[in-house]
Image (cartoon, rainbow, N blue to C red):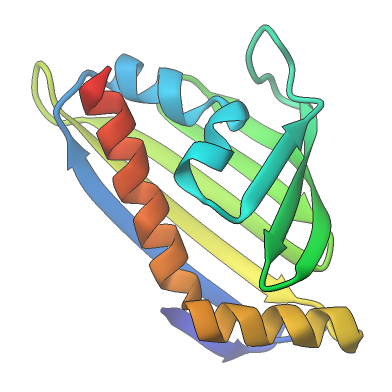
Length: 159
């Protein structure tokens, strides 16, 4: 994790950058990772996703996730700010956790792709932000993201 302790007008920013190789075309990878309804499948702390468009994401699309862990429940609003299918997406998250999630899918052969995520996040202050920070520390924020990346790879490769 890079960037812990960086200061940008507010709480510290943390950055996690992960990637994996997937035995599938970039288009097949994109079909899975660009669907927010899959979030509960990749992260057991995501309880529900509401408001995701039925016909796929577009720039300006918005949806909400409900997160729950260790007795805490909160909502995070998401907005797609950049989109270049099947290559790149940038989604901003707002709530007790503010984040920017960048996803790249690079062709790495005829039936192979490199799936890459970068997440920059800030945990807000106050009682809820402090409780979420304790949960992130206990559960390991980068480990949660690593498990999600493995789950995405598995979902794509299993079809």
